Image 1 (cartoon, rainbow, N blue to C red):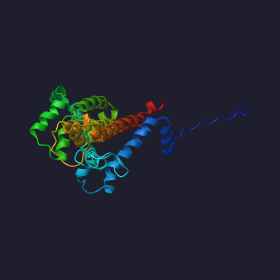
Image 2: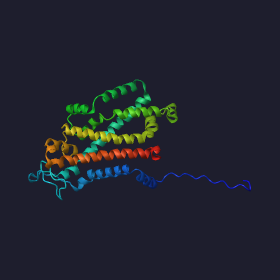
Image 3: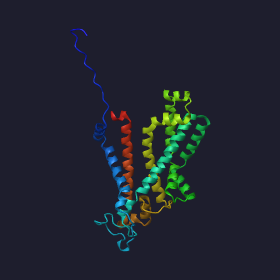
Image 4: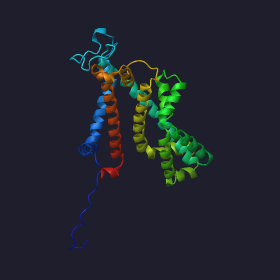
Length: 299
């Protein structure tokens, strides 16, 4: 360095944003997403922890039929004299578990066969696309009703499988398009040249680079499964018993809750909980997109 030359100023080193700082930034910039996460956590606590505090049978009390809300029974009683709040606390777990299982099955089908269609191509691609197009052309409600008419839905696992059977086509096409783009990348080409095998290429090279996309679509698959359950319960095509928000809607509507102010809470309460659950899942999906997509964080 020359005698009269000033020392060079070192360039600032950009440090990755620490997790606490990241979450503070996320909370300050994405208030709706934070609200959705908090709302979803509260609903999950109500559905999975609440029943431990309200265990036991919800006995019918003939003298409490359509009784108004009180301090001990904040939502009153339904047409059978059963506590509505007890049904709300105990009725969300089965709905959420079936929706989660259906989302897992439909997402697995979509990512597996969508990726295979893109990686293998040829007749495999044509066959998978043909089946997908056929399922897409059939209205979901009609398909669910037909499947439920031929199969007695008396098992939560069977109900989840029926819902998953209608929830995979859209995601499959999206996954196929993503894999068609990823298979041209250098690391995928290198894996294919090294003959590492299709399972390794699929599960070690391709799918990990789509993890954020899969997680977001998994949340949307849950919302679709919740809609499907409510429709099946409302149409009376599900033989499952016990407390369930969808079954509460079906029973309240069948008993004329729309025309009776005394029984309106038995219809409004489960609808409100389902709307809040779907809203929270939608907000969470949007917030996950903000987390995984750095371009959105820069806006």
